[in-house]
Length: 240
Image 1 (cartoon, rainbow, N blue to C red):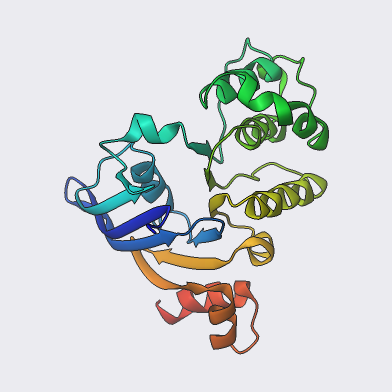
Image 2: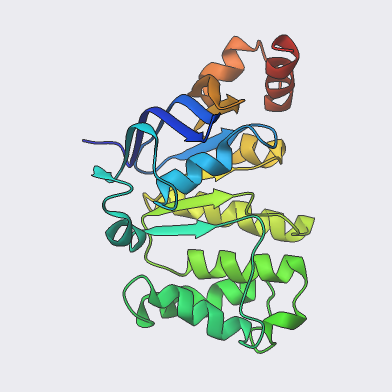
């Protein structure tokens, strides 16, 4: 059976600048793949190619077995995306935005089963206008919209930016629940403790190239008991 995400030898150039050089990435059904790297490593560019926002310069990029660029509109019905910097319509309420986003996955009714539950879990007031929300509350709107959808694949690019520690725990519980439901998650995060708890596999990218990939068990075994943070930092120290 094909991987949910299957990226082979992905290259992306902007003029003479090569942002991605031969990136390979795979996410299987029901697993959390942590996609790690410092700012400017190429994580967000890779995600934009997966979402069909950018077109690959070369290589193969497939989501649910279909080309991410050619079938972007169709694939978006099966994907929930949460960026790290959420911009919302200032004159809509949080609840109206959640309803709008969940409608993209097959009608408003698709999110009604979970909408109120997640609003309560994330302690959000959905009646307030989005212009009054803090960064953390804007992030909550995006997360609730994603979690209440019928998506099969969740692409999360720094999704917990602005959340307090209590909400981080709520987020972690929600991701573990998605795994139990057989959903797939691509998680990009700088919070390595969060990744350590959630990820099945890890791919580390540096300057547009994958420098380490493997299961969390394999990576920790090879690191002789070191934490994921130690592995991440040593990978960059070794390549300076």
